[in-house]
Every structure is written in C-alpha cells, then in structure tokens.
Image (cartoon, rainbow, N blue to C red):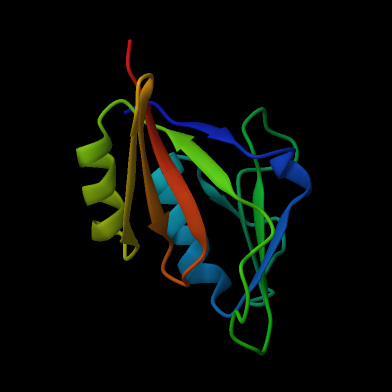
Length: 126
C-alpha cells in the first residue's frame, strides 16, 4: 500500500501528547517508517523517521494534560485501497470518525489515531 503524507514540513512538527511510545508505534506501522532512538532513553519523547533520513519525520512529546482542543496540524495520507487502510488504522488502535467524503477525483475518510488526533485517508481515482 503506498503512503504519501501531506500537511507541511513534517520534519519540524512535534505532536504534544500523553503516550509518545504508543503513538510512535501507531504511526510507524501505518506509514511504514521505523521508530528511531534519536531521543535516547527519554520516555517523554519518541520519533518516527530520522532527521538524517529522506522520509518524513514525526516527533512526539509527552505532556501531562489530555488533548483539549483540535490539533493544529492535519495529515492526509494517500492510500491505494481506502477500505484496507481503514482496517489497518483500526487494527493499530485508531478509529474511523464516521465521516466520509466522495468526490469526483477520489474518497476521503476522516480518522483518529489512538489519542484522538484527526487525520485523513485519501484515495485518488486513476
């Protein structure tokens, strides 16, 4: 399944959350990008990808409070099979919001990662 990420310069984005290891495992499996040890043994941080690599990098930082508002970054992940991608998200602990948009050029499904951060799966028609 191909994965393309849209949403800005990801190598500069930090996601503030309560479970860095849990979310880094989720995003690593979904994007097929390895978790790296760039923060050593610090359990308050986790990174998917590397600042030295050619793939996007996501860095997660632990915070004490739960998410109270919508996250200001939004990722769209392009997939070949939207049904299979939805199933993968759910198998990894994420969930479908129930929101789906069918357009002339493709389909978009609004999803949530295990901590409730919103992102979209996007399937473009050929």
